[in-house]
Length: 337
Ligand code: NCD
Image: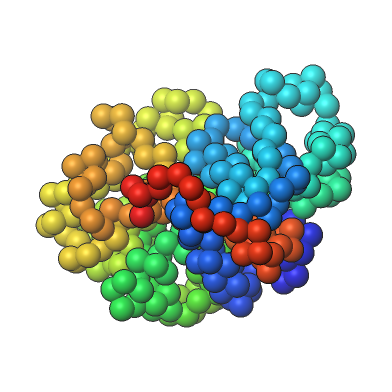
């Protein structure tokens, strides 16, 4: 794929070589993300960070990634505080805001909205999540994390054994991750959900067509007993008609240290796109796992900055210039690494 000036809307745009490229640029961003070095390569550039749906990590890590490259960030958060609530079309919003920005990141509750917006935008648009459809940058950071966690155990992505757990129907992170796994070989995928919240059939088909082994289950403990990665997800209550409906499924799959010790192979890595629902009735990943070195959720969130820096530098064509404007930071940065 040609990254320069490209919209990043779907994982389907990527081939395996493109993923390698994103990951190698992401690796090169470590000194900047870890605040050993600073660069001004995007000095003068503006990111329009437009989040019309709740977000902490995705919005802030996009903004931080852009700031770390020397660019400035303009935030629009919440539907109610934007002119969309006055009846403005996505087309008009895109025409206007793309005049104020060099690149736009956008999250919106409606499936397909970010692509529609991108058609009217005069600058590249990156999808930060469009309803239950896709979350391509999350899938990239998830796979980047998986690769990293596996390498430290002498493994690689091909041959991976992964369980995806929770709301697989509405979870856009697992939708994009499944599509991404189709680029690799010989993956064993356990899909663990209540049957009402099963992975959409077209994605199960895509995984099968890629030659992967698929096991569909409603049973957590058996499904996590022989995997490298247990990838848990939240019940996406904002996609249900009522909270009561979401409550039916909340807390169905709870992972804690005693379940981990009893059922998982040693060194099974636990992932979650976050936020984990830590309310007592849900508690999908118990805080008693926080001291477990195989809980990768915060490493995963940290990796979001690396992957998003990589995407910005590729789309804005400055990968080769990052080092040229770099310098060692003068402030104390000792606690991060
Ligand atoms: C996810 C999302 O928004 O799709 N969060 C994220 O971006 N890291 C998952 C979720 O909200 O459950």
